[in-house]
Image (cartoon, rainbow, N blue to C red; front, side):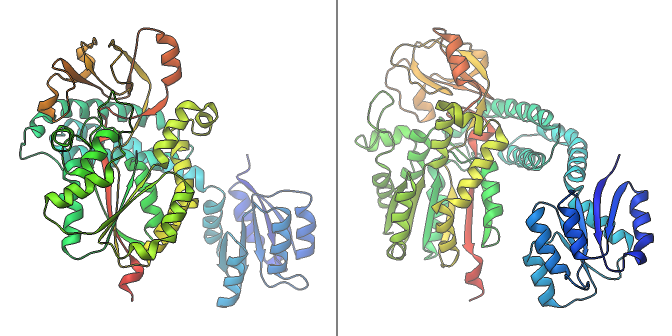
Length: 519
């Protein structure tokens, strides 16, 4: 079996016989030509896995040959081989999208490396990545068993996401193994939350940074240093998605990253209102009843965010000026960009971006979107495409050239749900698939996290008998009535509101443009 079909074009091809024999012994099928015209003619008849092309040839030069070959076989990698080290020549070759550049005299191992990089890279990366994860599997399992606190679980989650991102770029068959390990980790994390959450709500000293203290610990200190701050809150933004964004921005920004914890329920109504108010949901309801909207009311649940920010600034007796913007489409982002210079006058600019949350909901409702984002990797890919090509990329480009501190975070993440749990409630029970708020709920208590006294968790309780029930891991709630239809419709959808690392362990990145330091 051939390792690959090669075309080597060189006017001194007879002098390269030893190199060709070396490659043939390693399983490569090597075809040779001594001039550019013959090489171009051959490329019209046959395809190759890689072409080695001499730059200095009589008649048609290597660069001229390269252009014609690219017209015929644009996807075929071409390695330029030359005696010249002129920078201009290198620039022209690189600009013509060569795969590699070798300086004569070349030795066989140099050529072999170029072939591995350009023909076998994916299979080599797959093999090495699989082997590395296989070796790390047991270490992660032991690390999960040793988790005792928030930082321990953050370390496990970071490690799992690292492997998830690396394996998704390969042809690995080990993604199922990783998914099973993530499920084990989520089950362990859920037990950790059940043991400690109510203690955190009562004010224990070991509670992690949570939604209601985000401004106090991450935004106000920057403002105290007289920093101009842009706070960008991307709704439903998971850590794996943040890692992709951070990689995109790393050339333009210095980035500090950490994970914090969303409050329960991991839903916009609760977590984002807690961020902007600096209060827990029941405190918002008591202190600002006109700004809190109960589950059963038809009114939008996040229409008062600007007012809540104002109350928090006022409560801490601060005098920061701020602007607030909610971005639901490209037009609203364009309007924000048009006002950018005006926004620099404010101490704080808050930008809420809803695209990813809209994407997850659209995927649930649209068969076509479910096909386009049929797994975790595809879902991330769509997110990455939006980050690269939407107007938000322009916002980051502009911010990188300013002296502003940029804080990127979210209110919660989401998890891909596959395991239905039966629950029975009355007509006033909320519709979220990952948590239920109602009275006289019927469910299997062994499979959920229940909060029978909402006020102890700083959550509103509409009735004396109201309780909250949270799904854990990849479970979602389904009613027995029309059960099969309900399950088939919502299975394999991205949901939030419950307990999982994906929903609760969420990123916060603090950035400043690199260009500023060099000025």
